[in-house]
Image 1 (cartoon, helix red, strand yellow):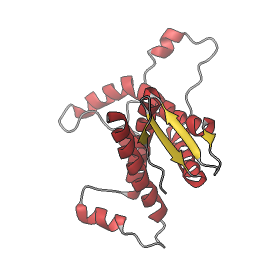
Image 2: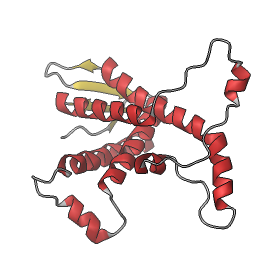
Image 3: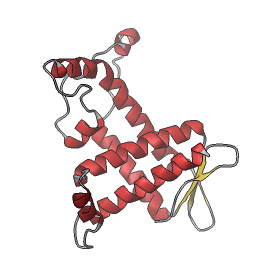
Image 4: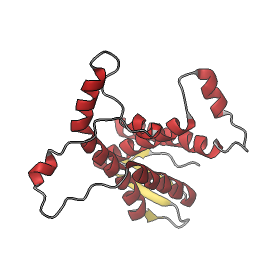
Length: 192
């Protein structure tokens, strides 16, 4: 997989993906949308102001990947659980919506991109598109890293990076590393 970001002429970033890369990236983003779950549709008679101030969950998600995407705001201490529950109640709905929007922006930009003569997807992202992609790439990496149980321990990480071809985690690890490359080159492209 060779698709990496480059700075675009008038700001933003550009990316060319071969058909397999575009398919993998789109599939991962769709799976992220499924993991995040559907957005609650407002009832016809629902007050828009009440919806704006709707309270979210107070308990951390059971799924480890979702718990990584929506971590507790406060660490340890006697009041940490109570403060984290209150913080989550007022922030998780908006954060979940933003994560959905980022993943959806990634899917839509791939779907709406043009192709060159070789069938490669050519993307040009403006400043907002770059921010959305950075959010989506970060969420995808966090999710894959959680599923792969990537840790800070260098010896454990080294073992994951050298998985044998027959290991069922190998494709996920390759995707995890590729997403890291995309994320890194996107940051480089927009900070030049």
